Length: 285
Image 1 (cartoon, one colour):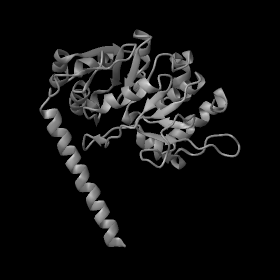
Image 2 (cartoon, helix red, strand yellow):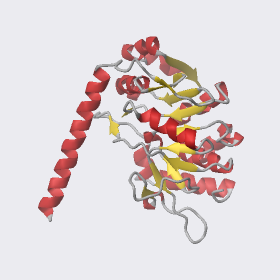
Image 3 (cartoon, one colour):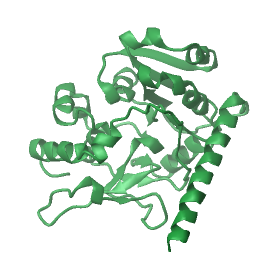
Image 4 (tube, one colour):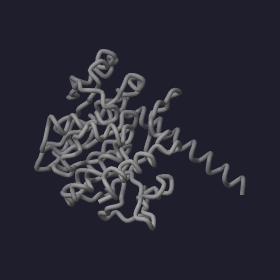
């Protein structure tokens, strides 16, 4: 039994190394894709993300993968706190020649990836991304093609299934089933909770106008933008759906990974913020 477990761990480790090496080769040959296909949506398509100086060393790799998609977006927007822009490395600045748009904004932490974009370009379709992940060339295509079939739904790649207890309240986040394989349905579901690492597509009007309430999201979900956006989509009457296009999550390896996810998952940060949302806004719509 132990031998089988060790073999599984070895396989996972070797496979992850292979995936990381393949991702490194892909971004090293940027730009690779010149003949991009139009997205075919009825609105502008904007890929949007944020970052901060401790992550700038890996940011250029992620941006290259986002700019090297098979489907052409109408913009790739990087939102940074005003004071952070001067710290951008040369490899990121060079990507402006390839269509990257760099914008300064107020420092609302992870909310920078979407809130200022919503304000600047209302009516667009937005796809959020993380700043430390490799996104393969077919990633955007998978989200867009699903959005064409289900234009009212919020589309994600990676998700959990939110569980509701007998009292009607959401259970502990750690108990939510990870929905990354065929075990969970891909149909629309009002309890499917997309996570940002896989990218999330928001069609126009899919978030309630209260999404822009900075005072409230800072008070209730200071580190939980995925929770806030999930709630605002449900408040707007929208459901969430997983795309059929699945990809391996490859996070760029680093010795000094700085992330809010460890506290949110291991330190029950998500549970505190979910409880705050329930107390302030009522049970999940």
